[in-house]
Length: 356
Image 1: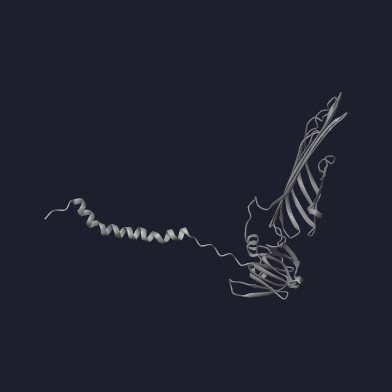
Image 2: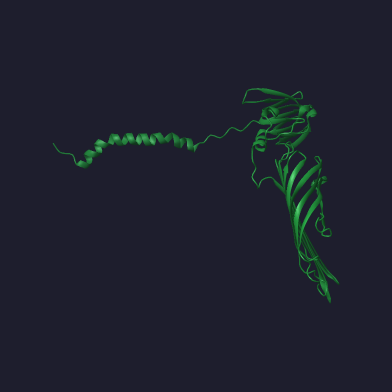
C-alpha cells in the first residue's frame, strides 16, 4: 500500500471543513450584498389637499395660518393665501399645533392650550387628532389665531436657539466725489442688526439684542485754504430682558467719535427700562430711559489757529431719554428712526443728542 504524502493527506482531510467555513462566510454575506446593492426608497409623503368653496382643488402642502389667512403651497401655482371663508375642506397628513384667539404661548404653557396632531378642516371646523393620546380636538376656524407646523412649535417653545441664530439687519454704503473749484468727498456707512428670542409673532418675547453702527466722513478742499474734514462715528449695543409682553429691563452701551468737535471718544454704560408703546403688523414704537456712566475724552479742536488748550476729559453721570421706531412700507421698504437725548447731572452743560 502506498502512503499518501503529508500535504495531500492534510488537504483531503481539511476539504469538508474549508467548505463549511466558505459556505458560512460567503453564503451569510450574500444577502447583505444584495440588500446594499438595491436599497429601498423611502415612501414619498402624500400631498395635502385643499378644496375651495367654488369647487377648485389644489394639492401640495399646508404651510401655516395667521389670524384668518391660510397659506398653502402648490406645485402648480406656488403659494396661495386665502381666508377661512373661501375654504371648504383641508385634508393634511402633517402634524400641526393650533393656537386659539387670545392665547399667548410661553415655555410654561401646557400642551392642552395648543392642541397638536394631524389636521383636517371641514365646514369651518378644525379637527386635531393626537397620536400621543388618541384624542381629537375640534376648534372653530374663527377661534384659530395661528396654525403652525408641530416641528416649529416644539423648536420655539422648548428649544434654546444659539447665539448666532435668528439675526436680521440692514447695511448701507454711500460715496460721493465732486471736482470743481472745490474738491468734495463724502463716505457714509450704516449697519443695524437685531435678534429676538423667540422669533415668532405668536409668542411673547423673552430676549432682544440690538447692534448699530453708522459713520460719516467728508472733506472739502480748495487751493490756498485749509482742508475742512468731517469724521463722525457712532456705535451702540443693547440687551433687553422682557418682564411682560411690553415692558423690559435693559443694559446698553454707546461709543462716539467726532473729529470736528475734538471728541476723541465718548463712551457710556448704563441700565434702565423700556416700554413698547405701539406694536402691530406694520409698525412698532419703543420709549426708553436709562441711568449711565459716561466718559468724554477730548483732543485738540482742528482748524483753530492758534490751537486752544485741550479740553479736559470728563466723567459724567447722566441719563438717556430716547425712542426707537420702525415702519414697514410698500415694496419691502423699511423705515427706521431712533433718537436719544443725554443730559448730564453733575455737569449740566455736558449734554449730547443723536438722531438717526
